[in-house]
Amino acid sequence: MLLAERLQRNGLQATGRLTVDSLTRDERHALAGLLGRPVPNDRATIDLAALDGRLRATGRAGLVALVERETGPLVDRPGVRAARRSARDAIWSAGRAQITASGLNSRPWIEAWLDDVRRAGALARLTPERAAATLVAGVHCLASLPVVAGGEPVARGDLASLITGNAHALDDGSVLASLVLRAAAVIVGEPYRRGAAARRALWQAVGVQTDEVSTTALTIGLRSQSGGTWLDVRSASGWETHLTARDLRRVELCAPSDRNVFVCENPRVIEVAIDRGKTAAAVCTHGQPAIVVLATLGQLRAAGAELWYHGDFDWPGLSIAQHMVGVHGCRPWRMAASDYLDALAKLAPLAGELPELEGAAVLAGWDPELTTEMSRANRTIHEELLLDDLLADMM
Image 1 (cartoon, rainbow, N blue to C red):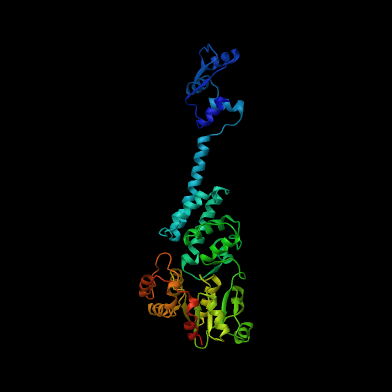
Image 2 (image 1 turned 30 degrees about the vertical axis):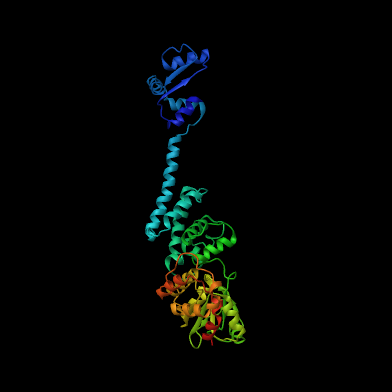
């Protein structure tokens, strides 16, 4: 057994020396016959190459074959390890080739994602061939994410069908979904967390909708192209409507008669607008806009509506505003430096109670002076403190 172990460690090569001890008299005589020299005591050192050569010189099989006849097949352990390394390398080579083909090499998050996938062992339970195919599909998915490709929000099933031909390939629990979600966490700078709510949040953050009914867009004053729908009835009654993604497939939105749609960050704006009998069309993002909110705005914009966005005067608010203006075609609505200064003046009696700004400054691309004035004043002004000014625009 010692000899079998040594040969397997040697890669089935008869090399090196092996020392055996506690030999019996019969074992010494047998070993002496093999070695062609006396074995005078119960301990002997065997030159494996010399023994293999003697066996072959006497017309017998080599040492490896002789041992296998006695113990069963031997395993080339270094060869097995090398094959495993080669298979693992092939997985990452396939992934990197797809990264290059997809134009993702320059993305700042790509290496962090690959490192995370390696550490997590996310592909470990798959065969090397399946692991490589899954990693390639994962990279293809990343290149197709709306947040990466710059396209419109997409349903998870549609994305899965596009990449794999299987609408369920990105369902919860799949290895492919895990790869994409780990990338989503790196892209948005959030920790990767398990749990249904955390997964939905990550999918949403990169522009992927997990279902058509769990999230909604809070709206008022919207109407359909055909007229006479439940949406038209609610809007005519002055009621709010929570639109789901499924609703957007049932009803085609039209632009208001004046073409203006007001987009706010805080639902309190919608609530007070209803209480004051405002009939203007408006959509609330409720902070970072959900996919269904963006889909609603996209449909309105396609119908010819002019979107006007207002949010909180703080750094997260400016970040959302920058996205809404720069990506989703909104125009700033009372979001200039002059509007911030006017608000500070009106709120002067409360200035000491206004919270200080937190985090890194965000450049307002539509009015860089706004960033300057906010940094100078170092005060947050939340949207609900400006209701009178905002509602004055919403006839």
